[in-house]
Length: 389
Ligand code: FES
Ligand SMILES: [Fe+2]
Image 1 (cartoon, helix red, strand yellow):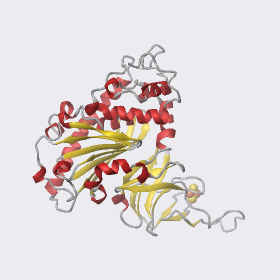
Image 2: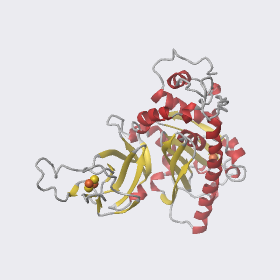
Image 3: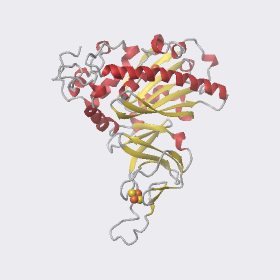
Image 4: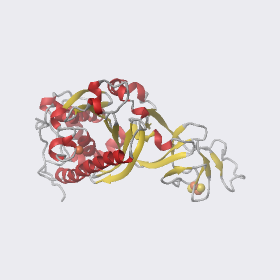
């Protein structure tokens, strides 16, 4: 149903909203108007100011472990190719032919070269043009200088990030405060044993918010996660410029029985750390295994998500891995179903911003809004909406 001009869900004055919430205390937090989640123009702003400006996680280094390994994906409308070159360097390349623009590679796999299906221009695994049939006589074509455009790529704790901005600071530097918190878990040594791709019918922010708040763990996941990590054990962590998160303890103390890196303290062994590097990455860090999501917005009401599980050490039986995968899939399915309903409600004319629970339970959502405010809010706070309370 279309919204009307008097609908509370009509254009809320996006920048003004974000400006008004900047610097507000956690105990005065409110959710965003529905239009933030349903408006196509606003999503274009998010694409430009977030997904084409910040560092965005696109996967794990294990996906391109060997020379020639590659995977392709759509990054907010940009066809990209991540490939481990046969020169040993992992690159993000535009997956767009330099002849007449055809998308070159599909899916994932291992390649010696990439052949455009249209006229068979060929590129090597570094992006350099190898062959362009029947172009030898062309007078101005610079064959030697022809290569697929390269996008900045950095690896952080085994996660691959791309960045379209030339001026964004180095990723490792920006995430140093977060690394201080999670260093002992050694995510960079964990190995990928489960990977799935899916499309969820919800706004990308709903999925990020869902993964990043502990308020729903007990009520929504009563038969799954609640038994392991209940809402009452959630504790907010101090946010940084490019991250936010919370920790959650275990329902039963299991320190002695848990496996994990020897650097971990007993307290760390008994704690999960949930963190986000917005706009694209959410991670649930555990000593034994960790889960992650890479978000790729498609439309205001749909997001593609790459989901994975990474495990510490090699001493895992298949049944144990299957049990971890089963818990993850069941939990994600519970989230997926409720987020369809969230998206439906956000489109209603009767939806209005509601109060957020306290800092330990939904403080991370407030942190996320603060990030949006820094990136997308107006410069001044003069235009504070009267009803932001
Ligand atoms: S568009 Fe790729 S070879 Fe022609
Ligand atoms: Fe959940």
